[in-house]
Length: 215
Image (cartoon, rainbow, N blue to C red; front, side, top):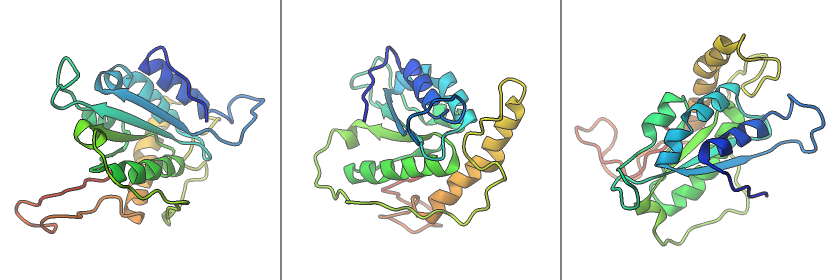
């Protein structure tokens, strides 16, 4: 584990983008690098361009990136209220919504596995009401996730070192939309990440969802 303080949030995101390019440059010393990025809502705002490019290029098959956003809906410690959902959606990054401290651990691990499988960055939304809470949690000694029965394209879902920017930027975008996002959705379904745990069943007029999973 290496903790690398960043000068700012978008340079930190760019560093993690490069950490997934193990097949692009010679002389690698490890098989894979997992990256964890954190920033408050304004940091997500300023990192949108780095997020978009890094997500388009993709993650390594033995890596993955989890981008944790600290959202402040009530502006308790921010100049303005903010939420990051729209930024992640615009960058075509799947977003997981924990509803408890236990969810942060469970969906955090799921997000890493989803990123590794789908080739996408995966976001994790946190809010003060969840993060600034005390709870008893279960920390599993090992956690395994189901790999969906989904046929991958010949080049796989992950970063393809043969693709170069800018001449193949249209192909980068096509792979995100047509291949990686469906892979992320298949992963979420196979591992039941999005489910109602309290409230009215699906189809009711006004369902009450305690937990939201992948979006």
